[in-house]
Length: 140
Image (cartoon, rainbow, N blue to C red; front, side, top):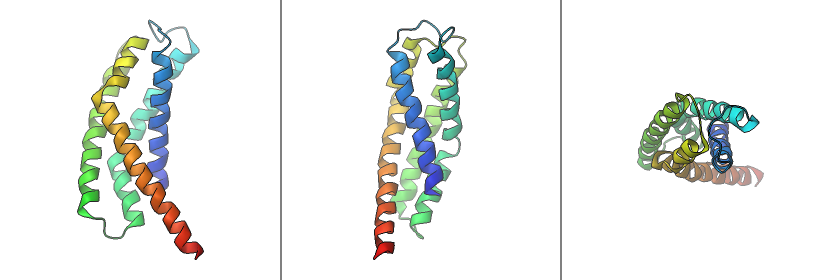
């Protein structure tokens, strides 16, 4: 369902935005600050959103198109790889005893996370456009 996929996208994008702010604070650790407490929570929520993300995307596409084009399936495979790589990066960061702003900045700069975000922006826009088109078609 598109709503599930788009909700997952929102969680991941909000986490990334939070991480940008956290990275700019110059904190040596996540200990002793409200942002420090929140950074692990945001990363954990993003981690959960990444699990089965590609399957959620496949379902969202199928909800809008009874016979998805091969390009959709190929893209979902790319998304699956990027989500898996991002999940590994987030798991590595979460395994650290201290989450400094520099560590989070390095995660933000990761090509894995950036590729995932670009994937989400791309397919999210496709799904939102389809939803608008479907709503217009129903209104006619």
